[in-house]
Image (tube, rainbow, N blue to C red):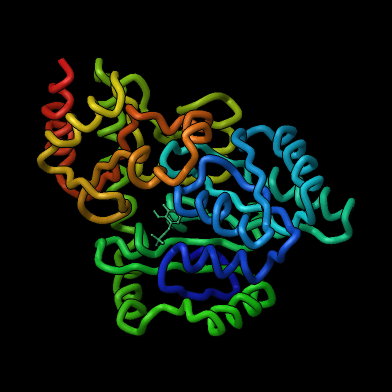
Length: 334
Ligand SMILES: Cc1ncc(COP(=O)(O)O)c(C=O)c1O
């Protein structure tokens, strides 16, 4: 589905990401990465790997090739730039990173340093149904199977996909540190793959209806969603090149801060309050106090994970029921 030669499964998305990074990076290296990233990945880079002498340097404008190049040059001053980790679209703001531009920067660094950094792309948010990063220049795709691929909120898993040669050292490290997926979950992933394309497309159609309704709501300041006509010209161009659908995870910024966001969340009846995404049931969460609470407040502010931000993962319920639930919950703000 990703168009890769080889794939490995792991016991979580974080296990896949961590094992892939540890197979490539060593102390003294620096990792260039897009921002925002899923909070767990951000914490892994900023806190855990930093303790082992692997530095991280982030860039936030993934649509600007020149800004990515400048960030790469700044990162090189911190150590050997061995990998570039990107998440596109990002969780929770749906910002896009131009995968081909990142690959071109990796090639430039390679010609300066003699070793080309590998490009790792987290494709959790769109799944291979709507985006195949290997076709655009990524060396390895990372995925949390827990989300759209599993699709039923009943398994935790991860995957790394790429060429057989790049996957082999990751396979060896997976055995050495024990991050394999258990047999029962493997069986469940096989079951989920049978319905993945149908689920992902149906949820995206529901999400389109929710986005339209949220765009029009007086207590919604901004809707962070993907689509062919959303965002600045550069963002639309990346969407056109890379994505064949907008997925079904989006964020809304309400009028107000944490207190108002909590009041809205507490009033939801059909949406369940949980931090996962990509399942058949719709979920709502407050990123600043949950998934992204480990991210330093100044970084949260810079990347736009505000206290008034609510993330919605749209599932397969009736679209009118979902919109009605959001409207009755947002009414608490009037
Ligand atoms: C984009 C992204 N990558 C990775 C992960 C981590 O996956 P897991 O929960 O399976 O460890 C998540 C989890 O939310 C995610 O959203």
